[in-house]
Image: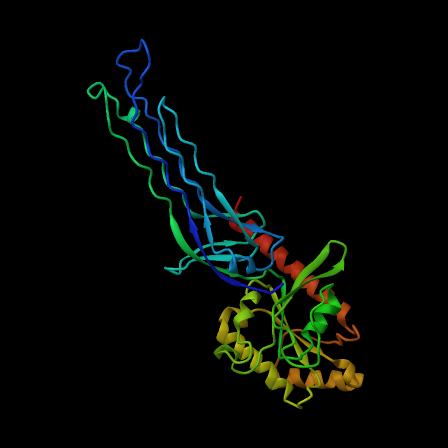
Length: 349
């Protein structure tokens, strides 16, 4: 399935039904009076988050969604039937913007969460409503109001705990396949990964986290070079970044300079993303003698003045993978506990 993370759609709520002008016409009942009923309310349009969707590709085909109009009122004080609401399923993690104003209307983070994007029109009232002691035979009614209509821009940000970043061919796809059941395309050329890939890393029973891999970055990505930074939005919901570093680049490039380059691209895209906790994971240790791999990693850490955690692994041989995943799991659990405590403090007694 093609991965699509942006779409534009048109939503139109139903109009309210018109009120009715009617008078009783029954045998043996003189001066029957008004009996025109109200119209029905128009249906509204809702977006509903669904876990079984992972892309916005369906909206490339279906671009317009309409709710039903309310029925008109009728005689004998019969109220028109209300229009049925229209529910449109979108992937969990979808942000909804008004395409004309750019206003953020909502962020659908939980499965089943509903967002009203177009409200149905109000019903009109029949002539019965206008009856009074001085107006025994009213001939006025009101029409239903139009339903809301708007153009929406949908933007999908995948929900993951940990994000993978790095230069092309750093081994991110191999790493993802080694730690999860995901099976991304793996090849020995840059930009093998063209779309974000999700995988669930199971450390132990009931201890797991979601990992997302995005296409590799190169110098000038923030200005559109390579695949640009289009997919970096999928890292904005993560708690932790794993920066995969090729210990033995085939072009002999400076490893430390490559790490700094990724940091600059993250900063140009989003300062909040560049400030996120980031661990260095030196990959492809199997291509070097064990001692040399460790020494080369230490040299890079020293050159960068890196103060965060760093690990030396081989995704191809799964060396050091289990220790890294366990450390990531423990860090995420601490983060979640801290967030729970902060929420409890904010809630107060």
